[in-house]
Structure formats: structure tokens, C-alpha cells
Image (cartoon, rainbow, N blue to C red; front, side):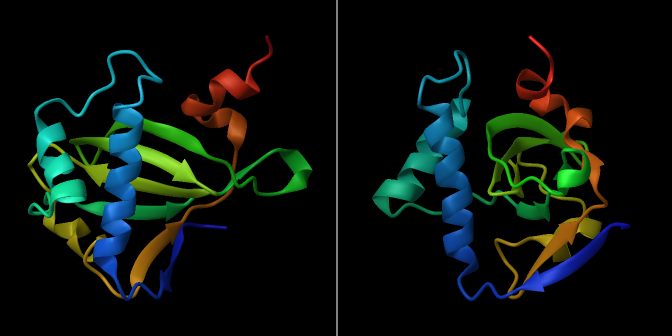
Length: 148
């Protein structure tokens, strides 16, 4: 299966953005990973999530992950938020029930070619679906897939 996309009804894109940022904020403030932080953006995110402040303009994109464990087929898994580079921008990624959320946080925004993929602005929301890959090829899954 090649990379494809589908459209999912998204009547409240702001709610999806709030979910994405709340998940990242919670991980960054949990103490789960020492040194993980939103840095100077933490106050802005807190103001929006909890104090009716202005929302940060952090683009959110969604990808349906398609990782497998051999003949068993796709695995719907979860990964805690972690920092990534996406489209040469700094951001965060996490996976919930097999759906990966990418959030760009470095103020550069997305390149123009990606603007139509922003689920925080679009209804319906575009979701890319990539061809199947073995989960062992995903670096973030190494702690759970490599032999001890």
C-alpha cells in the first residue's frame, strides 16, 4: 500500500488542537522524562489551555500509522510525546491509538505546501496513511522491540 490519505469529519478543529497541545503539555510537565520541557512556550500554552488566553499558532498534522508485527497486521499503539524534526521544523510527535500527531512549535510555521494538511484548521481533516512498515524499523519503538 502506497501513501494515501483520507478525510475525517472535524467540525471543531480547535478542539483537536487543544487535545494535541494538552497531551504535549502534560507530558512535558509530568517529570516522566527528565529535562523535557516546553521552555519559554510553557506559559503561553498554560494561558490558552487554562486561562482563556490566545491559542498558540502551532500547526497540527495527523498521520495514521501503519506498523506491523509480522503477519498479525497493523498495531495500534501509543507513544508518549517526544521532540522531532518535521519539514525541517522543530516540533513534537506522539501517537494515540495508532494515530500520530505532529505539532510544529518553533514559530517558523509550516511550509506553504503543508498548509492544507493542518487538522487544527481543516474540516474535514486530512489524514495521511502510509504504507505498512515493520514496527522494528521505528527508532522510537526500540525500547519495546529490541531484545533485552
